[in-house]
Image 1 (cartoon, rainbow, N blue to C red):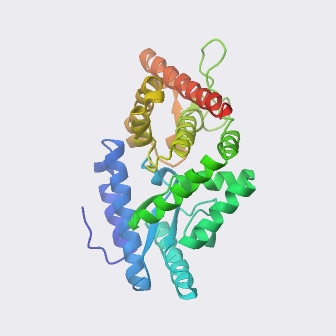
Image 2: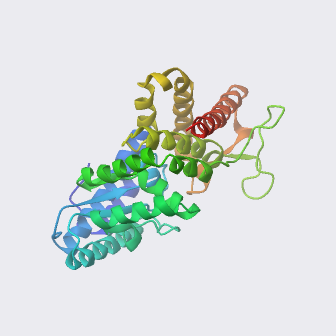
Image 3: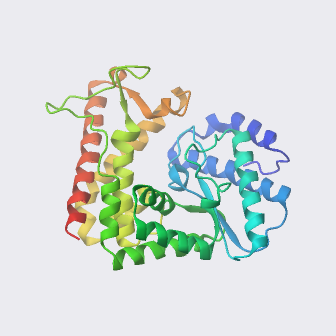
Length: 322
């Protein structure tokens, strides 16, 4: 892939020219996103100067989980080693430049401000530990949400060990304080049900997406949240949902139960891949018009939605026993 970019405009032009050649599967598309974002971050470093210490620039959200669709906003942060005023100023400046560059290239600013331009997501390793500890001890709805966002972090540039150390810190705390996992479960307990009591698909009744199913909140989110909780519980440091499931499948207690859910999740990813070329916006990518599906495709969709709900219920029951 192209790496000799001298401006954000160059990166955007190359991205727009190449994106349709990278829609074959989820891995190809996410490697493409990684390549673009990494080049933006490296160009930002060239503009700002040599970092004063070791660091990790990480992605989180769907980017951290290696699950981005064709359209994506920003979700990222920075961890750096030295807790000094010089490092604080440098990396926050770098975070601002990266956020600016990504917006220029076509990744809109995160509405929730989960970006390394925000001091909340740009800290020294020492300060990150303090912040994570605060989130776990206070355990408000917002704290738990932030904790889950961080647990999906994946280093794109720099030392991944910095990210993994902090994830291990979360896991170790959860082992000593089992109520943390229960608080996480409570935070994600509700999701959009799209299967009616008679087995019918429940679609959007009004607006632009009339007749559509919201795949993000009825299918992706239940899978992602349930598997993340198991990842925290078992100390799995990988971020992608699929990789987390593969690791869990090697464990005797999950092997037989998770197999069907794994294949349902893979089928869900394929549904999204099949639609990549036809979507025209970030929001469009989340909706599926069921009137355009064949009888077989509707049956497969119902199976996936049921599995998402069943997995969610299984994890709730499991955590309640902790």
